[in-house]
Amino acid sequence: MKRDDVESGGEGGGPRPLYPTMLENPQLRWSFIRKVYSIITFQLLITIAVAATVVFVRPISHFFVSSTPGLVLYVLLIILPFITLIPLYYYHKKHPLNYFLLFIFTVTLAFSVGLTCAFTSGKIILESVVLTTVVVFSLTLYTFWAARKGHDFSFLGPFLFGALLVLMVFGLIQILFPLGKLSVMIYGCVASIIFCGYIIYDTDNLIKRFSYDDYIWASVSLYLDIINLFLSLLTIFRAAE
Image (cartoon, rainbow, N blue to C red; front, side):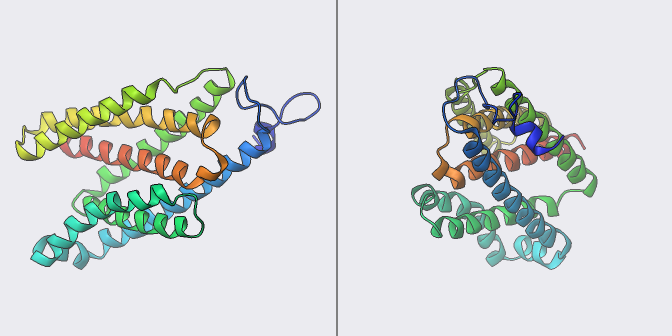
């Protein structure tokens, strides 16, 4: 199906609203959506490139786990994306600083993903990538279809936030007091469900609520949903191996 067939409708070929109560120009919203998904694609390509480098260039991963400076740097790389999110949130509308911060955020997070994958079998990584791709595309198409039918998913926000807090506490407990493979699998399954919900919620926000100046923050939100879903599935498959 051509893009124009999706974005336009009606006998006159005019733009079709993305949801029944839409008051803005659909063409402007479609342009915004395309811009966001273009940025996400760029982020994912950077993530794949950086992660693949970490995985296939073995001295990199060996340095991070076999030396004290490497372990310190590893911890910093885990923390740095969260630190970068703070200025990124405050300057996400300020061009070109927003793109620079987005690049730093993406690269540092990609290193963390790469180090996780470096100690995981290729079969599990492939299974996680394929399943993540299928789920993301399916949920995205479903959310666009549901929005067209008049469904709204804004009510999910508080529930997902609460579930995420519980998940973070559970993860902290798991780190301090390991409970075995079963608890890891449960953690991965619950995390996968939560981030599937976030993909629907953030896609719904992309369609209806994000302003045109929020393209960076919209991209960050969906990118994090995708990466966290992938890592959650990776956790499940690793525990089940």
